[in-house]
Image (cartoon, rainbow, N blue to C red; front, top):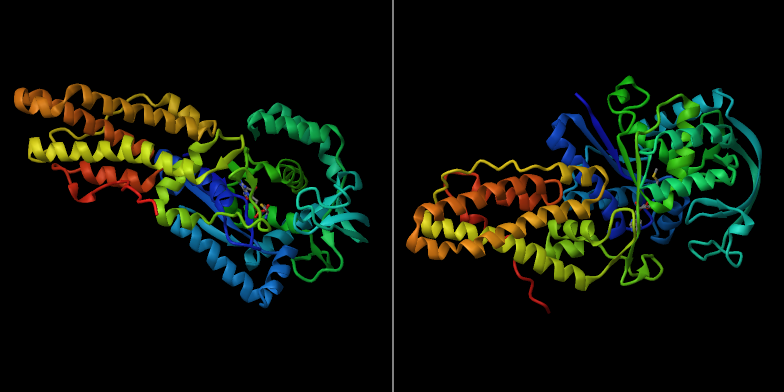
Length: 477
Ligand code: MSP
């Protein structure tokens, strides 16, 4: 039986989750749920977690007037709590301060060291701790971090380096030979162009830092946080114990476009060095802006996904995030658009349909369903959209079917048939129900709560109208 292992980035804990983080996690959740339907729950592993060993953690704890450990515990609760409230179906939530993660990291890094791929050298250059990334002088903008526009730190110290350059050609070959490895193609081209310009070895440790995981072969240094963080994808499935092989190599690693260099260059090179298989696929999605602005802590425009959920519910958040832009491209989060699709797509197209059909069956057919086995219309196209991560197109396909059912009802006019042709009436309503039951199945990965409600309404011998309105009107205040 084939297995499916999907991961999300592990997020920094300098702040609470915002809709950008929720987007990656929901996208991975859709894949996990979809594969569970196909392969069975036991054959799917869905990894999520937090990246605690960053300097940002230390700085944020200090800013909150807390010791690091209680701060990380608090944030772990916060992040896991948000995923729970959003109904994210993760298999494990990992924290990079957990002992089994530290053991896995030590094992991988020691392997790379033993291979002769880590050497001592002098690091001299610019560092932005908010990015946790080194910059060349020519990458800085007005001598500041190109992303955060904040001060960068000049560092000169003795570090350990990973021989990234050694894997340059092998990696390039792999990317060219496996077009599916980096998706979408625009990102693959970006990575290839980056490799083409020539890689440099990466510093993998820091000399004057306390917070972090110590290098196994030189405990005076802590590991560069990215090296530790990437290994979470192995530790979460039990590495170095052999059971990790039940899941590795990962089927799909979902990341945002901001971290493709780490996932598509450094990570595979580390795996090659450690003698481990490469993930089958790394998928990079675009970024959300909020009303046209970059989401950032400093502008204070970060939207808490729970605030959306409180007004609209989980499925509306999922539907909106997944349909607002084409996977791979960027998108804009707008409250107006959210309110609009909530009312039109979810409320009118789907919610009203379910409610109308349930009511008519109760009214005209005593609530009795004569044939409620789900239809099995061809879903090849839908499956190919999901395979290409085009969730917006998959949902569009489902909505075409939903709109078709609304049209059928408008044309068949069951309220007229009720007076003239009971056989046709029953056939029309039962047909719509059987279609809705298949639609519910197709919707489950995207809108799990709604799917369950539709099934509950129509799965029995009689309609269960207790489910009520799927998407109630929101009163504007
Ligand atoms: N800790 C690292 C990842 C380590 S993975 C081994 C990190 N953390 S992060 O908290 O900054 O999260 C970055 C990720 O959050 C992005 O790659 C993306 O998945 C998600 N997003 C953050 N902001 C986003 C948007 N505005 N829009 C969409 N996704 C966004 O980098």
